[in-house]
Image (cartoon, rainbow, N blue to C red; front, side, top):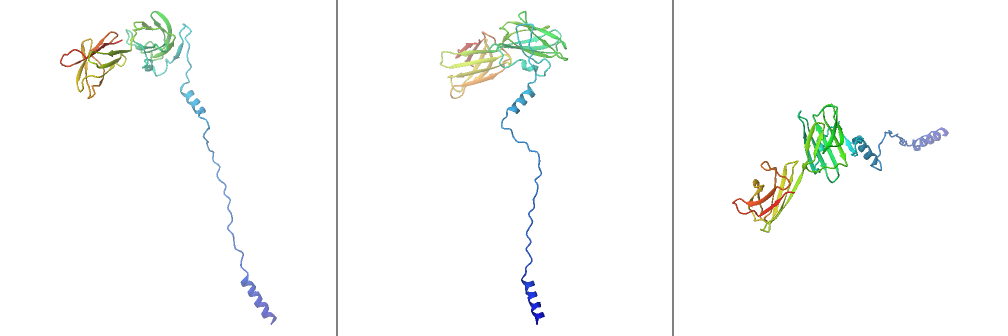
Length: 264
């Protein structure tokens, strides 16, 4: 009997005892530490680096005269920049051996830019304006060089020599105000470096074609719109425009010009 109850109680204990529930183990993973580049709070560092990377050439001073050589880039590949769009006077330079160059003067800034190509190689060329030395260009192995000079005085008709290259300064931009008895108005501008001029009129007859003459030579035609306005951009090949040249706007049948003026 005792054995019976012992066996019975043992089975019940085994049946009511549940094995412990296994819990998932927490896994700790280590994130791979990779270098990260954080943006700077200021862009000044980048700006300075960019500036130094592109403007590392030192300015050169010309001690031979009172004219400062703002930047001598005789060995750079930007000789074509010497003739800037802001130039007031320009001179084309040539010599007997075929070398060429350009000198441009900005009256507002008082700066003179000079560049040469095909001159004597690796040579210092004296730059003279109206017989006065204002600086010097040192050419590279190809005979190319350029310089920018400050505190220089140049006027229309001034002569310039760079070594044995010579030229004469002439005005770059010319303007003319157009007026007449018809009530129309207009203006004309000419750029001698680009050989391009623009004529604009208003208050003329609507939808009408007009001849444009310079020094009595027809150089183009312009047609107005329904409001009597018209513009023309052209590169003249049949007329030389300079200070004092006359310009007139007239119809194509020979009536008196409705507008006229003079370039200055």
